[in-house]
Image (tube, rainbow over all chains, first blue to last red; front, side, top):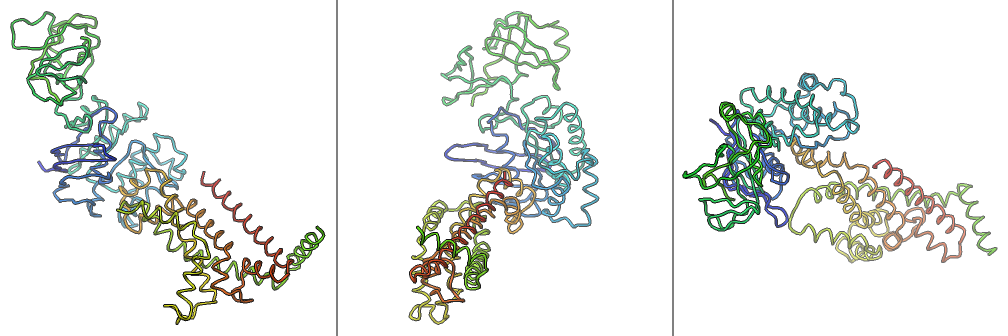
Length: 330
Length: 230
């Protein structure tokens, strides 16, 4: 599989603060990748880095097979499009914004009308073509910005929280458009979200960020605390771990590594087991997600068959168990 | 008190009767400052945008220097250029001393720091999403500078008008480099200084009134533009 991005030793610094520190990041082409993380985790910084508009970046970049040192060539710039969380539209009408994008990317004037009509129609913007961009609603601005980006036919589409501030109808419409776009051959989509369900639905792969670092666990069951070998203390629970990291102040457990039982597991190799109360059962793209309150809230993913066999319902008393080796520290 | 009142009446008479000498001076003054303003803007706006958009070592020091130059006394510029343009100076052969060109160059140098600084401020106070958006849209080099100027044009124009106001009101450099030659380098400010010392208080007062009207018009224009920018 070819790669849209191959990045080594990526670091982004701003005013004595490190915003990102990722040793190795590969993003496959012809795939959709979701960036997951809390607010301030570095999602926007990473997308801006991938769009080459982030200052203070160091690292080794290979973009669509070409080495990039500092600034993008005009040809590569044309192949990468970014839609920000709160997009900025230039003064003028919707049409003028679209025309300017084509002009700046060096498209011949003859191609403008055809492309513009196509994307105005797909994004349901025909009625707004002569409207002043300054008076559009947030959702309309987002659609115009998306049209302005897609009109230039990029191969890589970067989207920062594309579904934020949109109503349900437009979220669905946008999901369909993005899904269709990403299904075209040679297209790569990278989008940030804090919604794990949306990520799983649209993306082939997810990247989880925590405090500027990439963590290899889905973004669930992440707890702050102190580590004193071999126990991580969250303040509410003491968790035994097999990893050694004296600087660790965060731990995470993959929800798929959690075992749910109605009775306490005894005489097993499982080092961590906590009684708790089932608070929520929700559907997940990978199965069924259970939320259990054990003092800390744990999320576990089980199969539908397990759910049926355990005959669970909210309020049930359960045991959450996992091995010491399932605990990641960072 | 009668003296002042009579002078005021006479000055208003000169203005309302479109006195040829009076308006010749006004024309020279406006002509010199407009040309100085044009060339200063031609250099300052791209320089200001470039400085604002880029990070480089010494940028902060450059901005401190520009702030200092904004308050530079006009006689100091007059003195420095006098040294350059006088017959014994390195550019003496050009024969610029006591010509409108010398005043234009002086005014240009005087107002460039103001225009550069206000252009930098105009770009820095623009929406922080402007630059990243233009970059992702493929703007670079001239197209990037042009689009930034287009978006921040009202704030930049206010900087240009401020520069014009400083140019038309300065007296030191115009006096030292222009020599106050009637019909040639006699500007409103140099004429006010000269006519007053000659006892021609009415003409000086008429020029002073016109200068005030001009300043008022410029301020009015700036307020209107600032209102539009909001």
